[in-house]
Picture 1 (cartoon, rainbow, N blue to C red):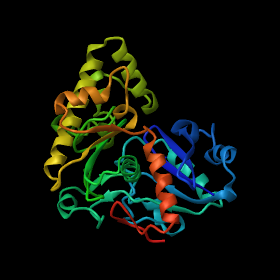
Picture 2: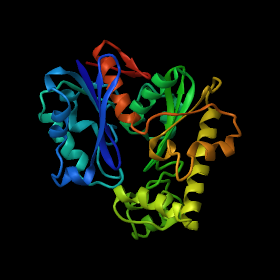
Picture 3: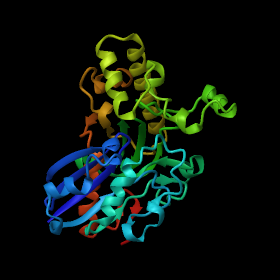
Picture 4: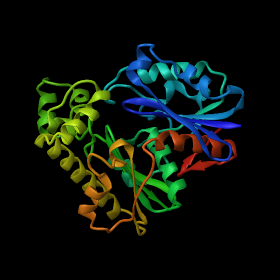
Length: 334
């Protein structure tokens, strides 16, 4: 008996295969470009690793997840659980092709929602402030964080292509700050005044601006999303001043966002969980050490796997199968 979790990430789609005892059997990632071009098949990669008859449940994340507010059976979800694909970052079609493959498999599955203004589980002030707070994989990342730490009141900082920070209070997600609102990631970031003017003057679309508002804007890097992070880190290793400024700025914005979320937590924060390809990085810079320069040992900083999105989704699948009715405050309706 096994469970599968899927993380619909910016640069690729990750899968975790987990035993019924909660042990990770395998984690692998499929690039978006390769999937879109038919160079690799998600279903074939899964078949190599697991007998589908042994899979009891798979938990899927997809795009913004703003069309649903509960964990639901995939076959009961309309339009793949999204209101629109527009304005959601660079679209390659790779995630769509993987989802289409999974729909054809004879595997029971559920979809994890994103967090947005219609998410009844969130604090009403966050719902009033922001129409969208985070996509579904941040829910699974947060679930993995709870499993790893045992904490009930903490902040999750997921730093990779985009940066999203999530506040968990009393074991439930209270609210989050989405990538287009607060801290920079490598690729995505907040839309500032200059970008808003570009949009108004029809020099660029909002989506184009969002997809160039992260650290790459400062470092002067452009190209395929899948290559940008490696280019930034390579430039940093080579001593490029713009790359260093970009990373230092990213870290500062994340620190500000974490500090802001702590203020609105009514309980004492137990710590901060760092994850994502940048948040868990030990080289060419140590993200934990660098961000701690701002916090000065105020927080207990814990690092979890960069693949926490897929791992957490598998953990959700296992617990939902075993009868869990609520995940981090999000209702289960199956």
